[in-house]
Length: 446
Image 1 (cartoon, helix red, strand yellow):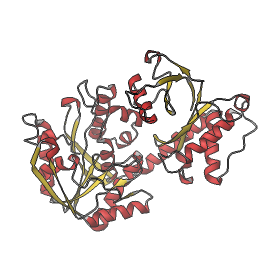
Image 2: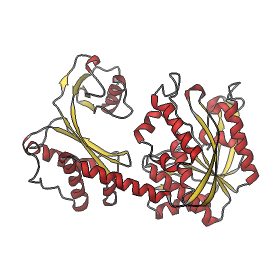
Image 3: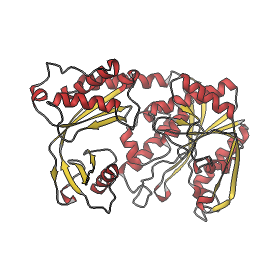
Image 4: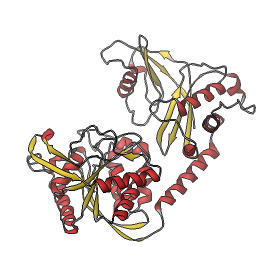
């Protein structure tokens, strides 16, 4: 695992080269040179990244430099191991993972690749991006990389390129968050102790608040060792400039019990527990999605629901998550149906099939979905943002026919200004345009 601050490169750093990190990377580079791999697989969080697809760089060769960091004379030219890349893609397809060569927007090497290559100086690579898919899917793609190497009998090395938290102090690129140092310490302990199950089970909201860029690269690397013990060695960790840099090496040991199966079993147990405690509101949302996905029909309103669901009316938002990541969310700010029950049924179907940010939910996903239902109180117009509270109130911004809504208590939204900014962007309202703000409270059912 190699961090990628361009400052470690002489000429870019100009006296601020982060020497301890540089020495740790140089040690890894020496180990790789001694192993003399045919191919280096580099996982970069700064290559083309899609929410539902692992991008593998296509083509025969490409180039890159440090021009955007003020040093144009340091250039790179590499060949892509096309056979290796194509084999990874084929194996991923068999395992139901979306990975391939579509959508290349920027063929030039990004700094997640060029910083490691400056030290490793290898000419034959495979470049793979992280994605918005689940942590478990990143682990499984790591398995695909290892299987491809085995099939081709390749001598190869995997580099997980990435930094830790970007929020270690107030001067950090992501500003200060309390989760920053906590995240870095947790990941470092997991790597030092080899507790990969704990690494895989870090809360997604906690990860997001830590403002990192290397976690998914690391998970993919660990996935390549599925069924094997891992000898891990933390060579260095430091956090100058508010960003954490973890440098570590990994070697395979003997065969062990499958971690993947343990992770799948843990997920099943967690969802089973959630289902056993779900409210009438959430159960109705889940049954609505399951009915629609399996039959294409709307659920008939059950007769055994509490009276409030059958007689009261309100706006409702239904949210669906899979492996901690949003899978769909749609709602209404005011009632459009004759009862809360029918409102939930309609919005559940919309959330699973009409949220344009995602593909419609498929039948195979149903056992792994988690639901929440927000029932909205009527919105009220406010005079200024001092009347807002991101944890208590959601907001609606309006300008003419444009409007945007944001629910309260969302992960990663910590201030009123952030809340309003996101709502304005959703509405397509410029920050300098006049707009009005309404606030509303919700009752959240999980």
